[in-house]
Amino acid sequence: MLVAKDLQKSYDHSPVIKNVNLSIDVGKSIAIIGPNGSGKSTLLKLLIGEERLDRGMISFLGEPLTRFSHKERAKYIGVLPQTGLPEILFTVSEIVEMGRYPLQGNKLWLSADDKNRVADMMDELELTAFTHRFLTEMSGGERQRVALAKTMVQEPKLIVLDEPTTYLDLQYQLSILDKLHQWKNQRNTTLLMVLHDINLAALYCDEIIMLKKGEIYQQGSPNDVIQTDHIKAVYGIEPLIIAHPTKGVPQIFLNGYAGG
Ligand SMILES: Nc1ncnc2c1ncn2[C@@H]1O[C@H](COP(=O)(O)OP(=O)(O)OP(=O)(O)O)[C@@H](O)[C@H]1O
Image (cartoon, rainbow, N blue to C red; front, top):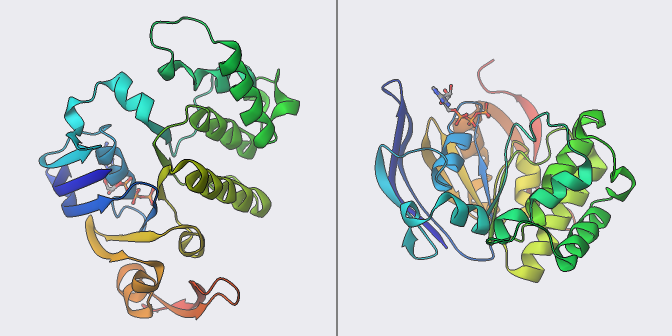
């Protein structure tokens, strides 16, 4: 679905992304992990065409990404940005409805089918009680769910999420990742997400891309990537890594700072 070759990006002459090569298959869930400032959000923005490459090539659905217009990209790629939704004076249902507009073609209004999909999505994300509430009157976690509903109602082929669990309590972190997983399985949607929580990445993603200073340090299954030496080299901590008792995937326990 998405292939990136030799990506390079600098800001103010200082390289932020270097020598990145990757390939993402349809229906997979991929996590990008790495310390603060390692280039996760920049890589995500390059991969969806929101930032210009200095060098390299990205193809999406077999075509160079640059051939897709902004509108076409919006149709195929749903994005949940790190900053969440801007402070806009619209109600929750109006905002979720905006997710259907990239699919409208020249139509200026939503059909009955669009409205049903919006209602179903709001129901699924437990937002129906907030239908007429303004976004500005909602908590951080509630806003995150509104942003996700707007992204999902668009029914994109690729969903890109920058820290989707920020602001969410434990219950909503799991319920949203479960829901994304369910959508991936039912609709063969591809998921690409930046996650700070390595344990959630191992639990919910098929593959993990671990960045260190703008380069891919490790890439592969959670078992390949979540290893003591890799975590120590990238994060500077000494973790304990144990297989999850029921899921079998690696989980890390904090055990000390390698530098101190
Ligand atoms: N628009 C920009 N102009 C200049 N420097 C930038 C810009 N965007 C990002 N950077 C720099 O690029 C580096 C990588 O930033 P990026 O946001 O991609 O990191 P990240 O891994 O997502 O970090 P975090 O975990 O803190 O969100 C950082 O040093 C950042 O200061």
